[in-house]
Every structure is written in C-alpha cells, then in structure tokens.
Image: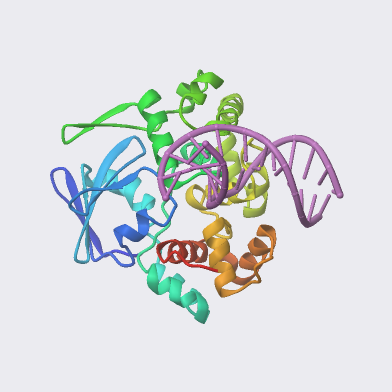
Length: 292
DNA sequence: TGCCAGGAAAAGA
DNA sequence: TCTTTTCCTGGC
C-alpha cells in the first residue's frame, strides 16, 4: 500500500504519507482526459459522476469535495493507492535503459477509470491530439452529461449509455470528432444492445480481452491496449503510439520495426509489468520531446 | 494557402 | 500476412 493513513474532514480528506504520487506525472502521462490543472497547481477532475480537486502538500495528498466513505469506496482504488509502486519501479529499474524513464516519471500511477467512458474516449483518441480529444469529451459531456456544481462552477459528468444510445449519427458528427462519429455511434448501439458486455470483457484474461475489445468499431490494437490498461487492470497491455514507438526506437529497437513487433518486444521484455513500463516510456518521450 | 500529425479500417499486394 | 491509402480537424 502506498499510503499510511487517511483522515476525514468536513468536505475533504487528507491521505497521509503517500508514496510514488506526483500530480503532474499522474495526470499528464496520457491516460486521462478529464483532469485540468488550476492556477494554483492543484488539479480538478471529473470521474464516477463526481468533481474532485486534489493537491499535494509535502507527502500528503489532499482530496477536496469528498469524504472518508467515498474515499474508501471510490478514490482509494481510482488512484491505485493499494498498490506498491516502489516494488514495480525497483523491478523495472533493473533494466538500465528503462531506469532513466522510471526516475523521470517517478510519481506516475495508473488510474482505474470507468469502462464505458474509456472505451469512447480512446476511440476518439485515434489519429488525434490530446487537446482535441479533451475538447471532444468535454463537448459530449456538456451536451448529454449531468450537471455538477463545484465552487460555483458547473461541470458535467460523462454521459451514461442509457443517455447516449438515443443519439443519432448526426448528433455525434456535431461533436468535432470527424470520421470517428460513426465509430462512436456504432459502439453505443452495441454496448446498449449487449447489456453487461464491458463487464464480461473485463473478466477475461489479458489476451482475450485485447481481442474482444477490437470487435468494437474504431478499436484496433493500440486503443484496445489503452482501454484494458487504464480501466481494466490488465497490466500486460503495451499500447504503442507514436511516442512509445519513438521511445522504443530510442532505447531498444530498429527504426523500421512495425508497431506490432514493438508491442511483442515490449510484452516479452516487461511481462506483467508492461503497462507500467509503457507509461514511464510515454511520459519520458513526450515530456522530453525525444527525437529518434 | 497547403501541409502535417495522429491510429483504425478497408483495400491491395 | 503485411503494406498502403483514406478518413477529419486544428495548428503552423
């Protein structure tokens, strides 16, 4: 466990002596789209129908707009606080090349996000840039999500499948997601018609999960890896996007190796910790804008 | 203005 | 099976 204890107050909690947790690392390693930094260096995010604000004060993590019960049922798992990242980093650092990335992104943690939201979010992510993905998800939430007020400002939860399955292709085309609109439309229909499909996929082992996710339109190997890693705790996933490709070329493989081969190489090398390794590599490559 | 980045799908080899 | 082309948007 990566924290010592938690203290509840009126409308916030203080998580004491948190290890391996840096806000910038967690929220800017490419895994989430609904967290934004405030002027004061805190982060405000929307998840599980709630708005929370987080701050790091020395070794303590302060989570605003919540209480101790909610922390235990939602945020403790959401922030993956039950996991010992020191052990993971120690194992991955045995690889001298990877150690550089691990040291650089030492406060990365993998969030446990919601299945449906992640499925749609990463379909939108294909051939897309992070600011545009964030804008599109914000638009969809503003149109069809629930209003949530926090500190006098209005936020919107990500809409449910019950809400989204009634929307037309045209509705989605008006969300600035381009050719992905038909994928989103098709996927919403499929999820609605197959009750519990995401929970069933969640229960599969890593390889079957990867295959089943790709049966959704707009989901290929990379997007499937992201969904299983960021919402289904399948840690042998190794999403290879342009940044990870650059990082792998920088550290390990030849320039002309295909994405598929890079994925296989990464999974062979890092095994059950592939997903963690991928996050350190992605963050290192992107923040340092590495060239090949 | 045109060109580029960014992955999956579909067509082609 | 692997490789190439197309899709859409915003920024340079």
